[in-house]
Every structure is written in structure tokens, then in C-alpha cells.
Amino acid sequence: MDTSPHGPLAPASADPADYLAADDVIDHGHPAIRALAAELRRDTAEETARATFEYVRDEISHSFDAGEWSCAYRASDVLAHRNAICHGKSHLLAALLRAQGIPAGLCYQKLEVLHGLNAVYWPETGQWVRLDARGNNHGADGRFATVPAEERLAWANDPDKDQYHYPTVYPATPPVLLAGLAEAKVGTEGYGYLPSEL
Image (cartoon, rainbow, N blue to C red; front, side, top):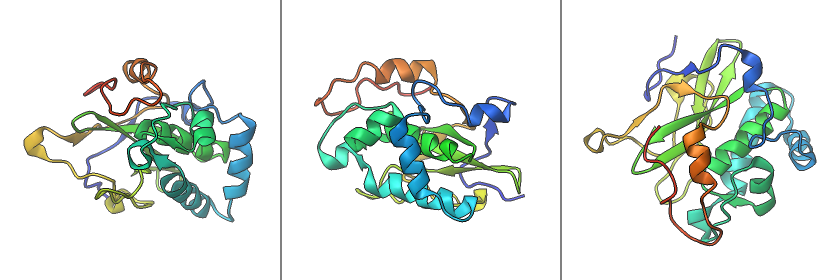
């Protein structure tokens, strides 16, 4: 099996249905999410996942890049505002993929603050593969992949700064992160409300 340059991944839940579920944050039952998911649907799951990933990466701005701090983190709110930090973008990507029947979860990277990204499950290979739709600005370079060995994420780790990727694929936003996201203030730039680690 292919090996990820960012380390192995394992799901937090053994129930595959959890990675297709909707909740208050990954609210893929919202009409706007369903409508966009239908627009992004292609002939195969791989083509659909690629189109969806590239849409969130390229068409939904990162708040830092846009200079607009919406503080949106619920998927439907991120879509409405069309900007969010990495966590909001990862929630939107998960919602759009799940709306199309593609299992998707949440992953994290320890940088100066906690960075959010996604993982997609490919039943044909039985593998989870990381995707990072942060947006390719300021040196970030996230690309689509379907096998772990080809993962290309926004930011490289600096081991000298104790940076690393967490090995867990979460079906829902961890409570400590959710509490931090709820403290964000609209229009206030920065990431002071985010936890530094899980």
C-alpha cells in the first residue's frame, strides 16, 4: 500500500456512516449545499471529488488572503460568506463531499495554531487520503490526490518547531476546536481563539 509522506491515517470511528453524516457544522442537508453539490457532480467519484476540492480551494477565499474575517465555520455559513479560515473551508469541503455520497472526515496539523484539512476515503483501495483546500496563496500549495503517497498539502512541517500531522480522521469537529471557533469575533483578524493542539 502507498505510504503518505505526512504519516498514517486512521478513522476515529469504525462506523463508515459517520463520515457521511450531517451535523450542525457539516450541515449538508442545507439547500445551498445540496444545490452546489449537484452542480459539482461529475461522471465518477474521483472527478466529483476533484471538482469539489478545487472549488473550495479556489472559489472560497481564506479569510487571511481576502482580508475579510467572517468567522464562519458552519459549512452553509462559509458558503454564504464565501470566506473562512482553514477550519471553515474544511467543514464546507466535507459537507459537499458527503452530500455526494463520498466519505470525508476532518484532519489536523499542528503549526503555530491548529490547521484544519480533510481526508477522503476511497473504498476501491481502502485508504484515507488527505486533502488541504486552504487556498494556494502565500506559499501554500495544496493539490488533489487519490493515493496517500501523492498527498500534497498546503504547508510542510518543520520538525524543529514541533510541527506534525495528527494521525486521526475525525467524523466531526473536536469539542475543544468547536469551542474556540465559537469565540471568534467577526471582523477581528488573527487566530488567537484557536487551540494550539488537540
